[in-house]
Image (cartoon, rainbow, N blue to C red):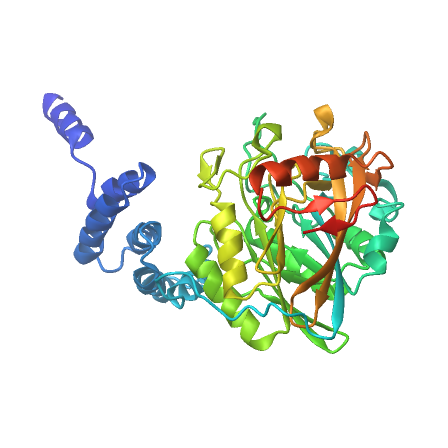
Amino acid sequence: MLLPLLAALALAQAPPSPREAGIAALAAGDATGAEELLTAAVAADARDTRAWWELGWAHWAQDDFAAAVTAWRKVEALDARWPDVSEWLTKAQARAALNDGPPVQGEVPMAPGPGRLTLAAAGDTMMGSDLRKGPRGLAPGEGVGLFAGLEPVFRDADVAFLNLEGPLADGLPNQKCGPNSTSCYAFRTPTRYVAALADLGLDLASLANNHAMDLGPAGMDSSIATLDAAGIAHAGRYGDIATIERGGLRIAMVAAHSGGCCPNVNRPAEISQLVAQADRDADIVIFSFHGGAEGAQHRHVPGRTEVAWGERRGDVKALARAAVDAGADVVLGHGPHVLRAMEVYRGRLIAYSLGNFCGYRQFGTRGGLGGTSLVLQVELADNGVLTGATVVPAALDSEGAPRPDPDGRAIDQLNALSAADFPETGVRVDPDGRVRW
């Protein structure tokens, strides 16, 4: 009896295998140590699919995307049905195709061309969610009429843009929050609510944000398929660059945020390459980013890397300007859930945060900061030079739906923030909403 007991004790005290030790090192944030251990694991057993999978993540964490491609190709060869391998292999290949180095410096015309294009843009938009709250979390009438009083601003523009905060999907399970979590937020808007976006005349939707993957890759796929069916272009995950044509002009949109699905706001050089690539084929390039810290205490643009919930969310000033230097003609920021400053840099308008636009029964609006909103109207020459802009003030009502704001609170906030954060390049908004620079 004693010998089996001693054997069991020895087994229990045996050191972990290289694979298990590597997984533990990766979870602890030691990607270099994880790589060494997992490399030993696959050397010992070249058919250890889990070890190859985790080795890919060790490479990814160190920005060695070519090595991640090699590891995940091995996973795919060993088990083509391995969960998510195809998705992450595609992302790693896209990242590996981008060159390291300083941000791209493109040509930025300063004199306006003869043609004109108008754009209407608003920020974080979530038309209700049936996760947790069920039907009472959803706007009535499939969301049509949710934007009452503001529809003409979008419909009258050549191009209309929103950041779609959360996936459009039917019945897919939450992949983000635990069942008993009280501080994690995940959204799911039924696909039929795309009718509200179509009714608004939406042309472009950003899917690069921290809620687009709330339902996992299947949720992202559902959003893309739903928007495609409605004729709404989108940008988000790697390789997904929106392209449309209006009035003979080719318009492209690149979108980024801080998660692994999409071009990353913490990598200005990577973003600048994507923008420059889009600029080679398009007349007008829009850059949309979901970045910066969140909440009323983060209304200012600090000019350094910001952190929210432990996640790096970019130095948005450096990011936005790098995008313009590479060829972006207008930059539309969102994510902080409050308005931020606007500036004109090299003849291009940068809106650092358009704030909340719609958060039906989900977004908090206490203190009037998260509930102060706007629609930004922009007029561009056919070569991207800014020729005019107007702020249409809005406010979220008690349900989180946007309505015109006759008090114009957005104008006062923008003027104060722009003057404070960009004393030389910040905009000035007249009481009638006209933007001056």
